[in-house]
Length: 467
Image 1 (cartoon, rainbow, N blue to C red):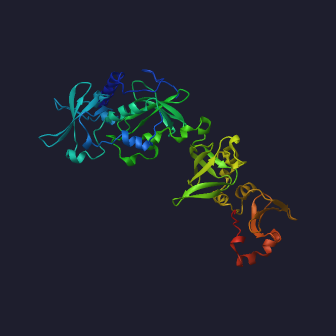
Image 2 (tube, rainbow, N blue to C red):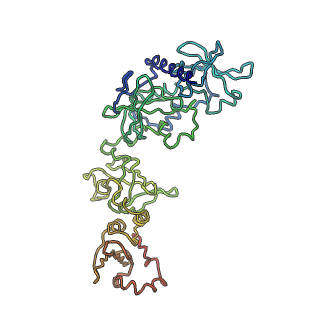
Image 3 (tube, rainbow, N blue to C red):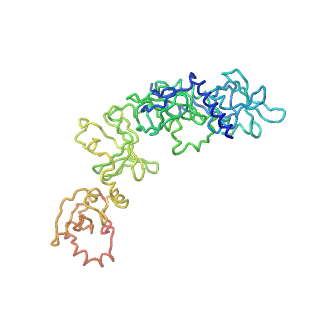
């Protein structure tokens, strides 16, 4: 076994030296031969899904055509388990020796012993090889995602090179890679901001599972790359495996074409993917049960901005945002310059309505945040949290014992009285008619039994919604 591993290692080193001039082997700039470096890192009118479906068709082995080109990209395991046999001698060939060789599909055939051979012509050697199916007949095997081990489909690489070189894209992931070795495949991961504008500088071969290596460069000249699956032809992975962290190995998981977000200026685009909070109560639209509805959103509600879309013939932009707790999607039309505010509508100005980050609400409990979103006052709230829920009071007073009370005017001549203890936390929240006397703590204690018997929604201690 030690000898086998040693031979595999020697084959790997030899094959890397032979591949240095291969046009499909691309590296991020700054990487040097034989040296491990510490280097830092026309608008397509179709939607990405249309672009992918039109240009990167999935080919099962049943649909393979003679002349389709693949490159041998073995994984570590493949260096120990041979994939191909020499068609002349019928002997297995060390996979490491074939690394980075281009195999051209020549069809399949059933042998006299009943075994199925997938035939290839090595473009580099003009020599015939075959892969023997491990089980079954070709018609059964070809529908599987297994394909031929070690082979990365070059049709995707060629098409991506044709369509993407010098194209501007947006980053959709935060984790990318930078090459560390010119000869080998070593890399380090780098963190990148989402929604950053980059330009495609090179496209080459990646791995068998993720065949297309896309190298991009940001505005500061830093290069990084992602290996992605385009059509998934012969990738060896099922569709349901491209989830969670592996989603970035799909083109749409790492990159986005220029769309509406790209037509805005860079200082507006910088708000993409940022967390913000509302500084004031405001109206927003949201989709629920298939309908768009206008809703009141309380102060200090947190959102993540997913999209910024300019409104035609207007200085306004539509923000598409996810609420940080419920993940519900909301929409708000705003301007990004105070000079563009129409008729004194201050809440239309992004800088007036939104603050950066989650705001003070991030320090509250989940129960309190729910009450704030619903415009209710509950026992134990701090003065700041009461202000988040119902705003500033129209009056504050003190009783003989020094207890502070805030009063809020509501519709239908209703007054909400909120009492605080010496620490500034809510002890009572009580609604009354405007013509009645304030709800002092003493009065509340005397009427406690009566309240339990005749409790109405207006008098619930949990508070009163904003109307």
